Image (cartoon, rainbow, N blue to C red; front, side, top):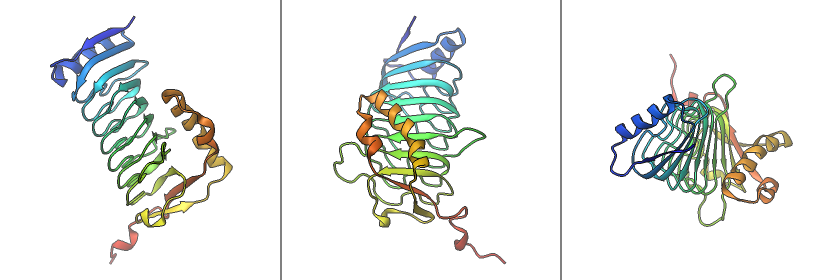
Length: 245
């Protein structure tokens, strides 16, 4: 049975209290209608819960989440997946800045474009490897200060610039994959292009297939496409900026 919550005119605090109470009562399928900017939806939730958000959620969607699946039928604000530990966020639209900020587990899929600093501070934790998959374009500093995980930019449509500058600034772990060629001038300090072998292709193939299942795309041309793999030039990208005595 599906529990529906009407978010019309609700401040995010009572809305999120309703959602948490429903999960404590054993609800596993929740639909939230008429969402307009409410923050922290699914914040800290655990377990096998599916939450569908109809509208535009505010910042920090799914923050600290561990386990649930959150589906957004619309755009999302800044930092969906912030410090997420597990679960899946699926956004049928675009998202703002700092998507997957400090995420250490789980997956975030964005059908269209994202803003600045997507994947910033993503990290791996124990056996967890977080993943951010973006169908469209990204603004500057994609993958900034990454310490682990995978960022995959599919560039669907190929219209206009797909990423700006400062790709993987200060990266010291993890990998950024971008479909097609990347201008070396777009890479930031500490980042470099790395070889793409069959093992690495096999690593991103399940992410491509999962993205296509969610958004109705044909996976074959995306799997066969060429990708640029970007990773850290060293484990200490800014070591030369400091003077040690």
